[in-house]
Length: 118
Image 1 (cartoon, rainbow, N blue to C red):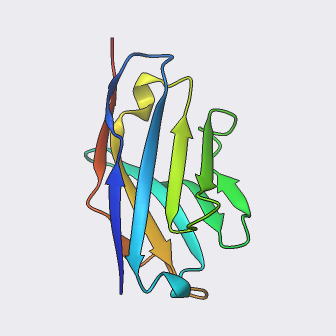
Image 2 (image 1 turned 135 degrees about the vertical axis):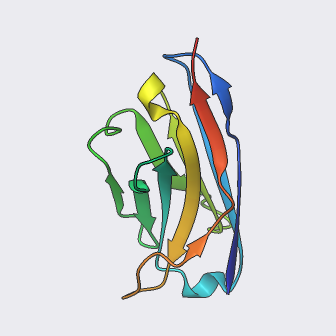
């Protein structure tokens, strides 16, 4: 089992920045990739960014160039999402997730609210 705890959400003005953190614990040796998802009421949860244990990254088109996913180089059990040039449409609950190789995302954090508003 893997436990994920997110932090760093909040209220920010359009154009501002936030950094989300996700700390993993438990069987972290089994993790192949970690990702950040977001969800707004009435819509499906969408993958925003992902990073593998080989540091390969991927981004949704809507955030490419504005968001950066990274991992703690020393501990390797913390993943960050640096969000710059935030827009109102980035408002959502953001979830950290992890998966083992050949599996779908199966471990989830509790979510953290990000609100972009003036």
